[in-house]
Image 1 (cartoon, rainbow, N blue to C red):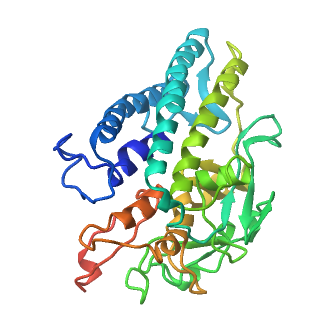
Image 2: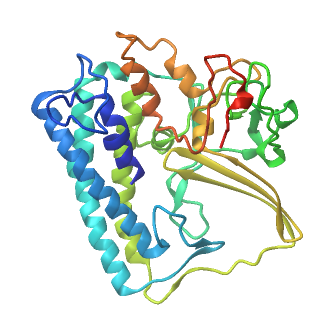
Length: 373
C-alpha cells in the first residue's frame, strides 16, 4: 500500500503535466515544467492514479482481515495478532492479493520503468551520502535467521552483513534538544526539548552508524539483499521501491498457504517485572528501531529511531549533513519559482512528516508564538 501511495499519489505529481486532463485539486495548484510528461502518456498515468486509489484500499482490506481496521492502529499484541485463521479469511485474502499482484506487476512496475526512460538524467541526480543501512525484515524461519530482505549495510563502497545497534549514536548539535540528549546510543537515549537552542533547525536527531551517515529505505534493503545495485539516485530509489513491492507481494502467496486453519496468530507473552529490549525491523520507508526499558512491569524508558530520522536528519556534531540534505547539494534547478527538481529529490526518499518535523521561521519571529504538535 505504502509503495503504491508513494508513486501515484505523492511522487507522480512531480513528473506529469496534467493541464487539460485534470484541472482540479489535488492537481492544482501545480508546477508545470517543460520536461514533464504530457499527452497520452500523462492521461494513462492519471488513469492509473485513480486505479491506484482502489488498489490501496484493497491492501488495507487485506490487512484488516487479520489485523482489524486499517489504516487505524491494528489489533496487534505482544506475541502476534489476536485473530484466528479461518478458511474464509485465507480465501478472501488470497483473492485481494491476486488483484494487487496483478496491478503491481502489470501497471506499477511498467509505469516506473516508462517514467524512468523519460527522465534518465535523474540516475545522476540526488545521489546523497552513498551509504545504505537495513535491519532486515520478513522472517523465513522460526529462529529469524533467514529473511526475505536481509540485514546489512553498504558503507564506503563495501557491503557488510551485520548491523550492531550498539554502533548507532544520535547527535543533536543542530536539533532542538538539550546537549545532554545527544552523543548517546538509543538504548541510553534522552529526549529533552530545547526549542530556542542556538543554530538548531530540526526536531529530528541525527542517527549515525559508526559516526557515518547512512540512508535507509527500499533501495537500502534491495541493495543489501543483492536484488538491486544499479546505483544510488532519485530514479534508483523509485525503481528499487517498485521492484521490492513486487517481491514482497508475490512472496505473500506462499506465506498465506503456511497459515493453518484454526491456529491462533499469536503466542501469549508475559510482561516481565524488569527487562531491556531492542527491536530492529523495517517499515516501508526503511530501518526502524525501538529501544525499551521495563521496571515494575511498566515502561521506564522508550526510544525510537524512525526511517525518516535517518534520512531527514540535520547535520551532526561533525558537520556532516543528513542523506536528504546531502542529496540536494548540487541539484540543478532550471526555474527558481518552480523548483520541481528539489521536490523530485526529496520525494524519492518518501519522507514521513508524522515521524520527523523541521521547524523553519524565515520571518525571524519568536518561535514561542508557534504551537508545535
